[in-house]
Amino acid sequence: MRHTWRWFGPVDRVTVQDAAQAGAVGIVSALHHIPTGDVWPVDEIQKRHAEIKAGGLYWDVVESVWMSEDIKTQTGNWKQHITNWQETLRRLSASGIRTVCYNFMPVLDWTRTDLRWETRHGARAMRFDLTDFAAFDIHILKRPNAAADYPDWLAEEAARRFADMPDAKIAALGRNIGAGLPGSADGYTLDQLLEKLRSYHGIDRARLQQNLIDFLSEVVPVAEEVGINLCAHGDDPPWPLLGLPRILSTEDDYAHMLKAVDSRANGVTLCTGSLGARQDNDLPFIAKRFADRIHFVHLRNVTRDTDTVPCSFFEDEHLEGGTDMVAVIAALLAEEKRRLDAGLSDHQIPMRPDHGQEILDDVTRGAQPGYPAIGRLKGLAELRGIERTLSHPNYGII
Image (cartoon, rainbow, N blue to C red; front, side, top):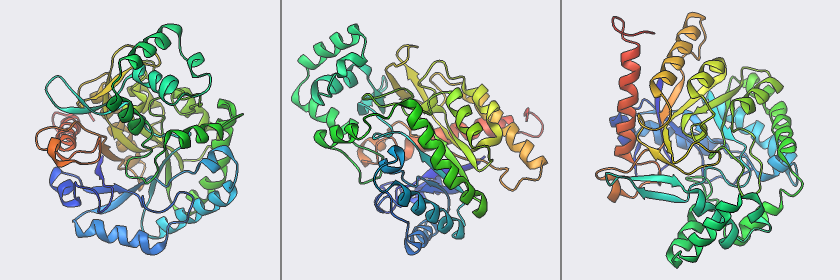
């Protein structure tokens, strides 16, 4: 695989040179400062390429071209936003980009209740606590009829949790859950979040799923034309939140999307951490089933408190947690060999060590939550070790 590293631009406290020293050969980045829905300016695209080259690496993957809520709901300026998305693909292709990641999660993207939860050995990790989330939804956000979305036992536990919750924890939950995408300027106050939720009134799972297909029907032909592979990131966590549907949470969800727009340019970002929060997602099998449509990989592991859906979980070390990372990597390496034998130009799949625990000096560096230098370096080293072993010419199995 091609080892890449997410970089949030000049504001990132982990530099491109740090990424190179960690073993990455490519960078995953985006123009976070460009307003959602706008066309990315050519000069800004070139500037980001130059910033990355100055650190010694190349811009391999865009993550992400932001998806406006107008596109997801098919309201407001959604048609113009799709036109702008198409033009951004053309400009990115002209600059040399061949892989673009996106997601279709409504309102909130990845969602955690604690961005720096202390693990058993003192590292800091991101955590989703189901009871804390229910307490936020019912008692802090006060979403209308929120309690009806939770089983009685959980609503009661959330009420007890909230009754004992200090003001600082209440404020932190609001900040953490309403933070939006890492590296973006989007974030929500409680009132803004409620307003965003109201914009989805009448949009159920089937409608949102169709809106995704409608979007792909417009942008995939452009991606084919300009030689870009699009790859959809899964829901994180992979179940409905705040009364909103989620449509890329399971193997069946991905199968529906890939069949509806049956083009190799319509592909998958295989995120083992996102999908791995559900016990019923068999990640090695998913990697094999969709192998020819996987264009980007996030390797990350989570440990679930229970095997229920939904559940509480935290982001564990890359080789710990519920996903058999050796089996996943073996499936990906087998697909790379198939592509190479078939003479495909995109036979090498870009992979990045997704997230990472804050360890050692990470704790004081103050990097983007989930994106520390040393924690990701450790994860990448472990993942590279598995890959090198499996593909060894004498002792490997690929």
